[in-house]
Image (spheres, rainbow, N blue to C red):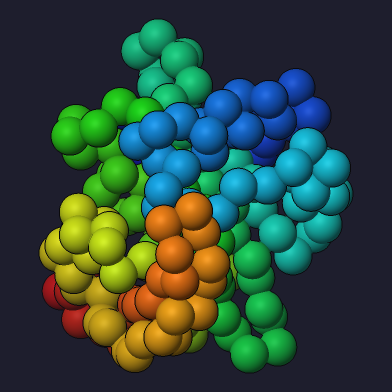
Length: 166
């Protein structure tokens, strides 16, 4: 996959340490789950999961990753993780536009969804700016270093995506 400025390519075993470093980075670690080497290796091998590295076209620099889970039976696409280390450059919006295109147009799902911690104000604002809809809250659903965290569910349906494209 690609966008105007980015290549979004399937991760390989050689990318796993980089993915873990993105997950552990102080700007990201509070807001995303973190996987082990073995979990990421299994994700690469699973046909219903997509683990992708995001690289700039200009420098071929690895700037982030995406992990999704596909549920073809229920026509759902869960964006499990996304992390980009080059902040405030529009890369996230570019990646999301390509992910929506992949999910709705190529994989023909009905719903793209994700969860975001309640204290990730930047993420919440970003998802809403994309046109994602807040579905609800899983209250005190995940325990992290900073306590029990609410997870807010955001989604976009295919018909909403199609309306935004018009």
